[in-house]
Structures are given as C-alpha cells and as structure tokens.
Length: 263
Image 1 (tube, rainbow, N blue to C red):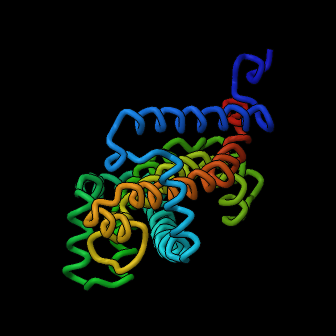
Image 2: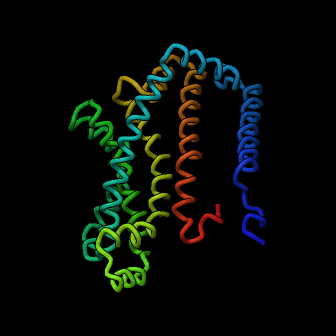
Image 3: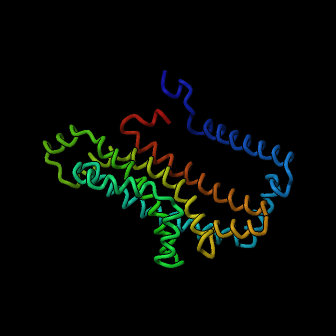
C-alpha cells in the first residue's frame, strides 16, 4: 500500500475539500461564539465581512495591505539571504561555530520588542529601521536551521563530486543546495509566519501605514469588527502564499529524498 493509501491527505480536489471543510468549521465556531458573546466585543463573520468590503471599496484595505506586504517581503529576503549564508558557514566550519555560537544564542533570545525599539531609537522612525528590525529578529532562526542543514550534509556526495571533478558551481548546485533545500523550505515557512507578526508590531510602534497601524487605530476606537477585518484579510493573504507557494516549494525541495510522499 502506498503512503497516500495509508491515510495521507490527497492532492487535488480531495485536498481542497478537506481544506474547505476545515475553513467552514472554523467559521461555524466563530459564528457560534459571536452569538453567545457581546456583538461589540466579538462580531460575527458577516459583520466583519461587511467592514472588510467597505474598507476595500474605499481603497484603504489595499493600501495598508500593500505596505505591510512590502515590508514582509523585504525583511524576509534579507533574513533568508544573510541567515542562510551565516548558517551554512557555521555548520561547515566547526571552529567558526564554536566562536560565534554564544553570539547566536544571545541574538536568538533577544526580545523582538527590544530590537524594534533600539532600531527606532538609533536610526529613526523610518522604513529602513522598520525593515531591518524585522529582519534582525528572524536572522538567528534561519542561522540555526541552516547550520543544522549544513551539519547534516552527506560527505559521500561531496567525495563523489570530487572524484568526478565537479567545479565549485556544480558542487553547489547539484550536491549542496539539494541537500539544504528542505532546511531552506522549513526556515522559509516558519520565517514568514514570524516575520509578518513582527511587522505588525513595527507598524504599530512607528509607521504611518500598514495593517499594524490600522489595528492600533481601531483599537483606540474600540472597533473590534475593523480590527478583525484587517487581521483576517492579512491572514487570508498569508494562507494564500502558504498554500500556493511555500507548500509546493517544500514538497519539491523534499522530493529528491522521497519527502513528497509525506505530504
């Protein structure tokens, strides 16, 4: 019996049905909770949908979503690039790792709020500070993940490549990157979920636009429906990226070692 036949979630229409049922169940629970609670503190899905439509029609939803997505994309690119390079270097060079391991641990345990506040104090309330503060919070997580990936590299593949006189570029492309791909995918998925949450805090503290700024604004007005509308809109965008981009990339990254069967 294949892995799929042993109860794995199928691809295609079957998988879509499972996801749709999951979302509908969540909406049903939300509706039940809204009926039991005060509508001012927990409005139902229909009310939040009406607010989201109004914000979209006015152009505010698109403008603020775009600002947040831009910051998420920039911070994600910076964190993945720097974190991957540093992580692979530490994983492949034990002496370098012994020296910088304490640095990584300290950096990993610095609260996000501290880095955000320091970035704004040192560099001002500007876009560069916001993006760099978010990236700085994610880089150590990427380092740790890719360091483990570099440590897990199979030396036999490297020896085989040397026997066949692979160039450094071919060694990187055909030997190192395929083995690191699952670790890159894992760092990317966890990184995206972490980064967009930190971006909201950055916007709340020091930016004039974005989903975090709007949530702070409507918190002051005690408009829970608007808070939920912006929250759910951005969650929907992140889910679309997760399902449409990150999960397919992760399956492809793990395919070379038979990891696709596990998905």
